[in-house]
Image (cartoon, rainbow, N blue to C red; front, side, top):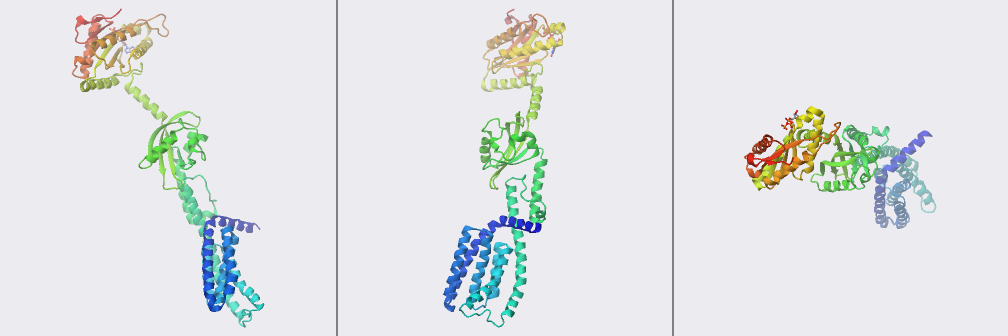
Length: 524
Ligand SMILES: Nc1nc2c(ncn2[C@@H]2O[C@H](COP(=O)(O)OP(=O)(O)OP(=O)(O)O)[C@@H](O)[C@H]2O)c(=O)[nH]1
């Protein structure tokens, strides 16, 4: 009983999968029936068998048409088609006096077998071809001369038929089972290959076990498993996305760890809760469609991780247009940490860590640009070199930390008074520089230096220090119009002017080349 139900279940599986083959076979069989009916009608004048050809041939064909339309590929249709084919062969055999009987039937059976890949069709057709002798014999006893049972050698002939046909039918039965299995396997392989091409590696439509013994399926399964393993062990989060409906069809473990249920298998990718902006995915798709090799590599996008926290990611996206539906494979790399480290490195290289102002290196770069713009486009610039007055006593009295705080406050004040395209930098110690891009003349630079001194000289309040702390600054100014020969020359000019300020009593602005007499006293 169990064995029988298992056989029936297997048959149902084969039937379901081979349906496309069999629906096609129905059409071929009906076409064949039409052809055989025409043959019957062509033979009719010679044997005067019009009545038989029309009475048997036409209803047989009509029923074949009906079944093909109402039950395409169904077992009942297949059984009928096999028998109908035999009815025509029987008709032709008897119209021709039985000359071509065995060959004709045999070829017919081979056709049915090849088209339907079903042993039941062969069995039904065989039973039918044997039975027709009995049926026709019976019918013909009703009036028409009996030529089957009247034949004195009937049983001898019958025995010969059986002896010839049974091994033949057995062989074809075996072939039908074998073909059915092969057809089933190729259907499964196509199905599996389609799923793989569509990127669906997670689902396993084929039960493991017996079917794995089929070599084609085993080969495709192992290919699929290798792809799956590759995807799984990839440290980079990866997903396969169908483009037509935007469904996620596969994700790897790294992906699951990064996005959790926010972008899981089966979700519409554009609806996943990982996008910082709703249109990002759409924009990426548009760019991908226009990319010459259908690859977008290392596109920086802000996303949300599985906890909804913002992460900066680099996406690589490749489109597979050779598969239907079109697929895209997406890999995501979280570069938040990398960007942070790069920012720190950048800061270390170009910023003064204490005041967060640009450092000497940045200033040099800035001055290089200003120098070039002056020489190439006559865009003027000014440079102020500042040195704090009375800074050492702060350090000595309140400690190094208080000194640091003073430097930080000075840095902030310089930034506050800066115009947009000016650059305030710390050279080191208590020395600061302000590069005034676009500063029209010496007078404007001098005024800016004075503003800087005024800002620095405002009272300071330090943590842990009672009362206010006073600090001052001296400034040396130069301007592009003073024609320094080089960047170093510009520095030197400002430094010399600063030296004059310091020498002349501090807390003042001096302009390079103006001599001591033109030193401007600062407001006290
Ligand atoms: N707290 C602190 N002190 C620093 C730092 N860099 C340099 N200094 C100190 O700053 C002081 C600079 O010396 P000076 O320029 O002679 O100090 P000053 O009292 O302003 O002297 P004048 O410039 O002649 O007015 C030294 O005592 C350095 O040790 C720093 O990053 N933090």
